[in-house]
Each structure stands twice: as structure tokens, then as C-alpha cells.
Amino acid sequence: MFKKTVIFNKKSINLIKPVLFCSYPGACDITALIDEKEQKLYVANLGDCRAVLSRNGKDFALSEDHKASSQKEINRIESLPGGVVSVFDPVNKPNSTLRVQGILAPSRAFGDFGLRPYVSSEPEIKEFSLTKDDEFLILASDGLWDKGNNDSVIGFARKWLLEGSSIDEVAKKLTGMALFVGSKDNITVMVVLLKKVSEFSTNTNDDDLKEEVILSSSEDEEECD
Image 1: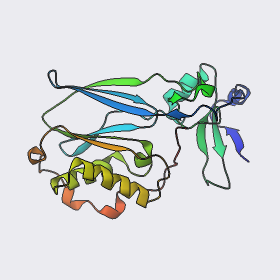
Image 2: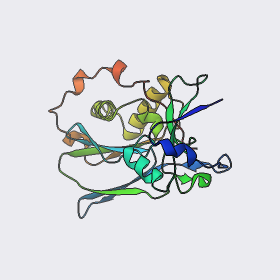
Image 3: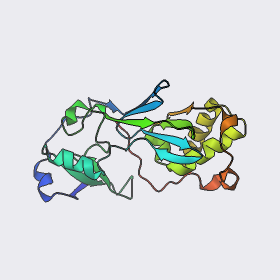
């Protein structure tokens, strides 16, 4: 049995409407489009998938997670009006999780029609100018990011690439590490090279990375459906 408590808006509890959501599964998405001629990068995000760029060995976030914990998303949902509720499950999870209408943690997704309009299907699209320091992209679902921060994921991916691993091997290693530390969510990882590995800058601290601290189990895991 879930215990529900309103965290942000006291009137939100009165705005939560009964919904039939089990028959309407959903999915999140992250897409990147590279315009080589104009040297532009376009990223479209929907939900809690994430894109991160390695720029001269440093992580550069290309998207923002759409979660019920985001103040921007809370404002959008409550303006409809809808509610963001903290759901506590004392049996299966020691911590509470913010959920749209008390049900879903991601605030944007494909599907999940029973939670419209509170869960939006409108993506957030961003444009970036590519530079000579840009090395590679990582596009991944939240099963990876729940367990690893941007800096550690980029750091280890870069280290493995410099050691000779292919992009497919790096994606598999990141997936394996997330599984090893207990990720229970969907894990999909894609690595995209923007230049030859031989052209990567060597002025970084890749040798100082310690494999045992790459991933953490401190963040909540929430599926899109």
C-alpha cells in the first residue's frame, strides 16, 4: 500500500484525478542530429534519457531530464492544473519518489495516454555549435544515468576508447557496469565518435580514474512505463 503526501502545492492533492494508466505503457527518447556542413548539433529529449558530450575530456550536458522533481516541470503540471506527489513505499523502497499525479516519475514521454495532459509528449529541442574540442557523444536511457554521473561516465568511456576499445565495446562496458551495481531499469547506451580517437587531447586525467567509484546506487530508479 502506498502512502501519498503532497510535497509542493497543498491544493495539488485535490486536483489529482483517477486515471487508468496500466493499459497505456510509455517510453522516453533522446535523439541527436549532426549537421556537418554547418557544424551544428541538435538534440531532442523526451523524458529521462540523456545526452552528454565529451569536450576535450570534460562532460558537457546536452539535455535536461524531464522528471517530476524538476521545478520547471512542476510549474507546467500544476498550471494545467495537475499535481506532483511524493509516493512512499515502505516495503520495496526506503525513499519517497516524486510522481506526476502520484503515478509516474518521468514528466514527459511517448504513450502514457491515461496521464495526458500532465505527462507531455512534446520534446525539448536544443541547438549547439560543435567545436574542434568535441570528441564523442553518449546517448543513454536512465538505467545508466541512475547509477553514474555525467563526469564518471564520460571519463571511463574516454579512457576505454584511448585504450583501444571500439564504440560498441564501450557501450557494452557501460551497460555491464550499471548492471553490476544493481541498475534495474532499462539500459540502452549509444556512443558516437565526432573525431578519430587519435585526435583526442591528451591533457586530461584519465589515468587517475578509479573503476570502483564510477557508479553510485544512491539515486532512485524509475521506469518510463
